Length: 208
Image 1: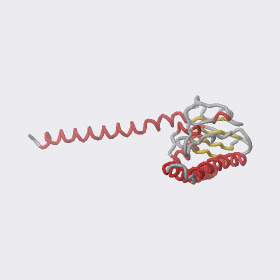
Image 2 (image 1 turned 180 degrees about the vertical axis):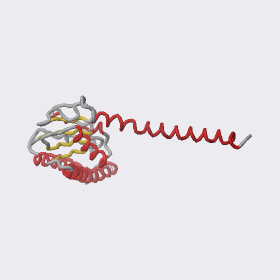
Image 3 (image 1 turned 60 degrees about the vertical axis):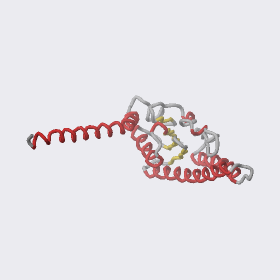
Image 4 (image 1 turned 135 degrees about the vertical axis):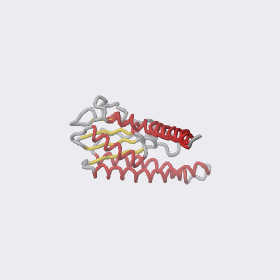
């Protein structure tokens, strides 16, 4: 057998390995590709219902009224220690400053409940430990929301209020005009900071 003949099977094996790696990469990125396609689909309503006023951007391609931000994928209705029960914001009500007051009130209620569990001598050790962990997570979540708001405003938007949940986020943005590129830019910020997928991100635009 010549050297060329001996090398042929090895080259073919290398070729198969390369093909397998390429297909694995494509498969891993397929969901991202689909979500990015939805972001830029002009027929999907991604840029919101009202370019001049309030509208909701659902990054899976479904648009609704501003007040429909509701429960983004369910985490806002979850009960139990560290859950988000009663934490769904009314994004239609009040100014951006009032939205922040509303968010602070939500956190204050949750912190009070968790502190009561953590300090309850009649609660199990497991329950007290979970309450302590949830308190830490709430503090971290507040920091994440503030970080996202600052990043959004650094892109030139006048104001933003962010509500982050376990696997979802609501972003209220102050903007007179809001296009698909704006939705993509803000969604990328949220995803990079939190790791939440596009399907869990809802953007609400308001001009006041």
